[in-house]
Length: 409
Ligand SMILES: CC(C)(COP(=O)(O)OP(=O)(O)OC[C@H]1O[C@@H](n2cnc3c(N)ncnc32)[C@H](O)[C@@H]1OP(=O)(O)O)[C@@H](O)C(=O)NCCC(=O)NCCS
Image (cartoon, rainbow, N blue to C red; front, side):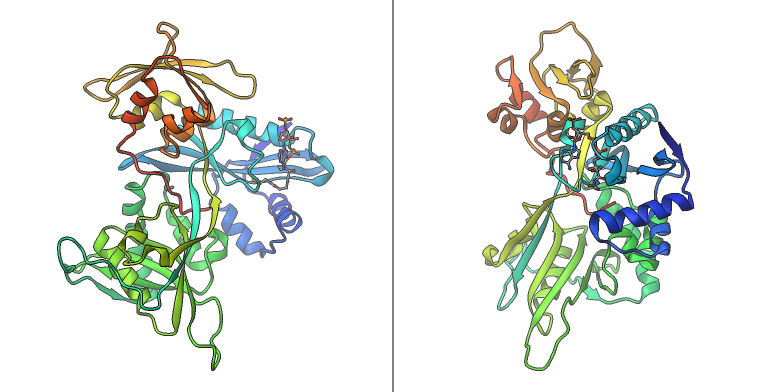
């Protein structure tokens, strides 16, 4: 019933109609072509009943799981079923095909952005990152002095489009490889970012500031715009920072100072920030930067337990045996994970007694650093059969930072 193929005009029409029907989004054909051009070339899944009645699009990119440690991820997006064909199992069939194919092709993790929170848990996906909007009252705002004294001479400027196109992809790549949860942005993604920003969910008409370290190398950037037009008497207005990427803390400071000192601006809205944003800790008064909105962003599902466990549990100091409950009628799987000189080894087994029992979505949340085993044990999502095994798992992940994903798809 499921067909897999390349991008067709019929799929573009289906996607355009679905966006209007389900989300009220009106994109031009050109924007849709650009957006769908970022998908895996043979990643277009459809179900026909005379015409396309259900469809989805597959993507492939590396995802950073630990600092400088990435594995291939399979994304699915643009999922839509015509209202006339809903609740007949078409979404389930699309996902089954996507997960089967992605696992066969060696993807370690499956990821998606969910339109609603109640749909994808049943397929083994867990929310692993949150997008947070901070509202920062910059009137009289100050930054805390650095413990090592005044920062060296970092500079902030607004370079022309040509330089931005050259520098930003490399800066983001350096940040992405060091940040768990971030997806790689390909050259076509960056082309779309400049030529058709809507296609990658970016605001039109953004300005950019670029930070340079004292030796002149670029060390970070921010994209921003003013959402409201100024009129005489309206005074200072808000500025929206869509993306802030910094490779070191001096750069964070330089960017915050730049926005705190902007003329005709009393509020800086920072979008797509992590929930526990370390940026706030640079402020004299952290309460001036309030959380205005939180939404889950990346949902993930481990496809290859050994690969992800070995990539993530690098600090494992004692053997662990996990019993992992899967979805879609698959039997539970037992995994032995043992520490080793070259890193942990994870093998399927039934030899040892089970230490911890949990579902695949909760295992995903723990391995990707979105939740800890003790937190999930406290709410009954991780069952500890051997005393202390929850802490062994938590210790093995102690060095990981909470994941963040700033690329929507
Ligand atoms: C959401 C949507 C894709 C579901 O497709 P569908 O073919 O009706 O789904 P299925 O019949 O395969 O349902 C599979 C399971 O998901 C459940 N489900 C489907 N839609 C759901 C929803 N909106 N909320 C909660 N559960 C939902 C079904 O009850 C079923 O559960 P079960 O098999 O465990 O009993 C479809 O209604 C749609 O296109 N909606 C508008 C666009 C959208 O939200 N797309 C998702 C983008 S992330």
